Length: 182
Image 1 (cartoon, rainbow, N blue to C red):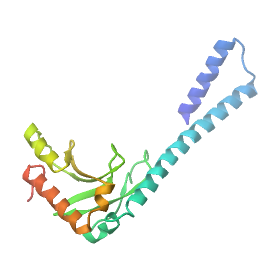
Image 2: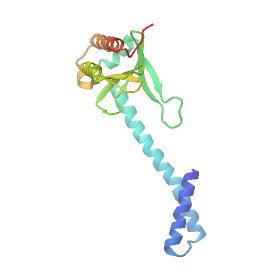
Image 3: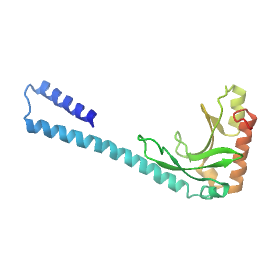
Image 4: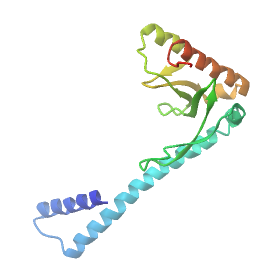
């Protein structure tokens, strides 16, 4: 709020410099009030619309088969961005496959793909290891590994096929040294 007040006072200052005459007090107060109220309202409205579109897409996504049956594999609803004031809270699915925590959400980079993500240990990835992971459609970022599916691919899978594929995903990560089993 203070930022918008400062910007609006700066805007008034620029108006005074360019017109070489002072606006009346009522005009100045009116400009400040309009700017201080409308700018945060516009920004908040835009953020809410984006969040609502994301929530609608996520809810529609989790109603398609086999994602609507993830609870059979032990997945449950979980909250994303729960303890932050900078994002709206979103519902995702999380569960355990082969004693590894997996989160399900749509891919942030490509909205047409669904990502099953787990945390991994940092490893240097050489070309050969990268090629072996790519063969299994696994992408590794700094401290997470993701198995991505298109919605079309998921609709053709049964819940048991998906479970076997996720178990294979975890086995590959263990074999490549990204996950250490105790």
